[in-house]
View 1 (cartoon, rainbow, N blue to C red):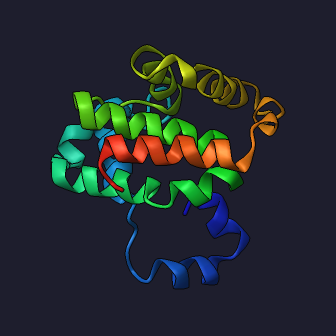
View 2: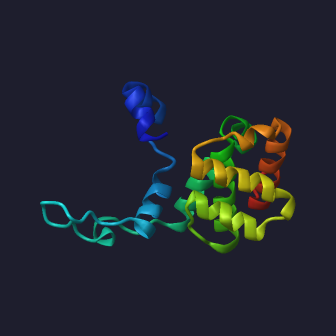
Length: 158
């Protein structure tokens, strides 16, 4: 869940989280790898991220990103852009231990996955950059679910 979901229904968000956030390890990993300390404020600059946050264990990060794509064959038809790029991110971590943004995950997919997937990944990247899923609408639920199943098999979650 994300902050925007919290804003829509704070009590529902808290109830749904049941005291845990499976995305937390992934968020903290991204923070420690790519975050920036706030600067240019009228107050003093904060301490370095590594001083405030400890390292994220690789196993916790892996569990977090796997949880994010565990239902990919169903989720991909609801949120194709998000799911396609997340699957590429997770596979990049699985194969190469790379921690990538969604866009970087898609670019990684274009370099490392079979060419039959390029049009779908390119459409997801375009949707991500332009905030428009028009080009993804041409794919059937079966094509999307097949992509998800094939990547999950490579990630070894199926």
